[in-house]
Amino acid sequence: MYGALGILALASCKEEPKIMDGNVVRVNQVGYYPNEEKTATVEAVGFADEYQLLDADGKTVWKGIAVREATSEISQKKRQVVDFSEIKTPGSYTLVAGKYAQPVVIADRVLEGLAKGAMKAFYYQRTATDLTEQYAGKWTRPAAHPDTEVLIHGSAASKSRPEGTVISSPGGWYDAGDFNKYIVNSGFSHGIMLCAYQMQPDHYAAYELNIPESGNATPDVLDEMLVNLRWMLTMQDPADGGVYHKLTTPNFEGFVMPVEAHQPRYVVKKTTAAALDFAATMAQASRVYAKYPEYADFVAQTLPAAEKAYAWAIKHDNEPYLQNKLNEEFQPAIFTGAYDDMSFGDEFFWAATELYLSTGKETYLADVKKNIPQCYSLPTWGNVATLGVFDWINASLHTDNAVAKEMAAGFTSSLLGYCEEKIKNVDGSCFQSTYGNKVSDFGWGSLAEGCCCMGVTYLYANALTGNRDYVTAALQNANYMLGQNATGYSYVTGFGTRPFMNPHHRISAADGIEDPLPGMLSGGPNPGKQDEATCPYYTNDFADECYLDNVNSYASNEIAINWNASLFAMVGWLDALLK
Ligand code: 9MR
Ligand code: 9MR
Image (cartoon, rainbow, N blue to C red):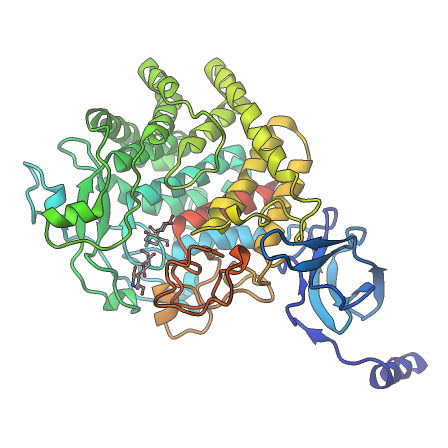
């Protein structure tokens, strides 16, 4: 009795109300693992000399001073870093900095929901499918873009399929905020997810996603990916094995629902990159899907398709996608995503790697050796060599393949060296993260290409060495992505206390539902500001703040399958290691 009155009295006389989510206390808004590092960043200094963590009853369970004051190399802003790792009891807490406060969660399996959400986002991107309430909740929408009548564009014409021929190329996922389907980006997306999957197969296979295939005998993750893999198979010209670069409308559609988007759809030009990314993906999938007899019909198609595409690429080893040039020659002109790439050594390396690992044929190994990457670089849609490196490492760790052991050994020191360089950044950092301290960490899609793919790299480093510091480093990148960063947003829709709300995503913008589709990673801060002409709201030039939670910001706030694939790879793998 007295106690309760005492608290009331204290609240009314002494304490000012706390400002919850004043966006001053920056934390991983999804939450922390009981036994892992836990830090927060307080935006600017001087809010408080002492910080407190309160439990759900308002009792102070921890107090302390900042472990450091750090100055951003990017903006020169000064911030404080708080470390409350010693609190290990699962629960809901509040971290208090003077008059500001921020909820904090500590829980086991705290990233599990996010990992599943990242994969479920692909279901929401499905074309040609009715999204029903049972699986889509409030985000139901009718099927659109059946793609059973797609035109051969002039750039893709061949003897057996002249310009204007109608082909069927149904299924698959929308690439991003737009409604087109691109082979290069699909290949990368499957590539990074299948790489990670092979490192933790039982773990990924156990995820239940509540998709139409849930309840069958095969893993939901593989079922969801199969939706897009089967579409990819339809993009191969059966006559010569070449693969169309993309299936697209001439112009981007407006911000309407898919059923309202009616431009004709074309397949355009066969390219070297499309053929090789296709070959790599199919060869890789052939191994993963072979474990389940239910996939036999798909598996039977994979290697013949992959070998045919690869043979086409050997004969056409320099067919880039040059959209402007094509537009001088062919009608209609095409203005959608280019995924243009001029150098194919990395695609040859990845495709030859996967074909060798799946067939054992020496000719592929010879091509691998001709295209060995010279240094470690983060994998992206335009630089896929590292996906090959990842699968050499996987084969070296999980099979007796002597070639793989030798190959993997050749890549280990540059991969570990890369990690060590990045990890050096943590100690003086504002956000207790290896990512996000340098201007060069930011660009179009950098939260995936930089933050998540760096995290995946650390997890390979951990697999190679057993060194637990690499897991911590990956988790630190996750913390950055989920709110302990320069804008204070959680960059995944639907996850965290302050998630971004306005992706450059046509369905989210047009569906009349306030919440965007959940589980999608934003491209994130991008000092390139390529959208500034139509979206003139950037407030400064600091690379880590060139971000707008604005539907028009395609350069900083779109979503895309390759980015979600990187998110899923990193977070799913962390969930596996920390359970
Ligand atoms: O909406 C398009 C987005 O999906 C693409 O990623 C982006 C870059 O290719 O382009 C967007 O479309 C914009 C176009 O490029 C320029 N005019 C404004 C369009 C957005 O409304
Ligand atoms: O992810 C792509 C990025 O690396 C490029 O710089 C950018 C401009 O070419 O395009 C991005 O990909 C977009 C694609 O072209 C169309 N669909 C949306 C993709 C994400 O913005």
